[in-house]
Image 1 (cartoon, rainbow, N blue to C red):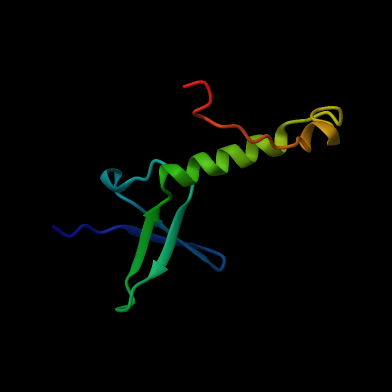
Image 2: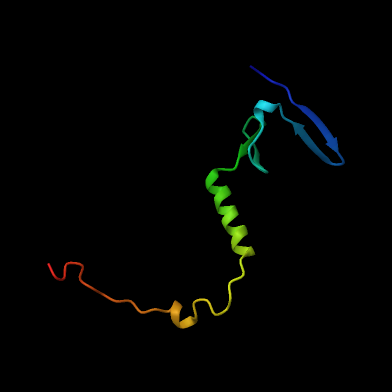
Length: 86
């Protein structure tokens, strides 16, 4: 069943008023045109939302300069036999 949506303009922008059953559970969507010229809206995936939230939180986090000094970051590798002792 086809549904209609209301279009409105503000300046040089155009917006679409979606019916309630087409609402997105996100703040932004991807938009593209297919080969026939139809406009397709796609919600961001949960993985992308988690990634964006992580990056946003990372920018907000204040990590002191003393956290993981250069020596602590440059640890040497050790080789061990996982079957030693059997």
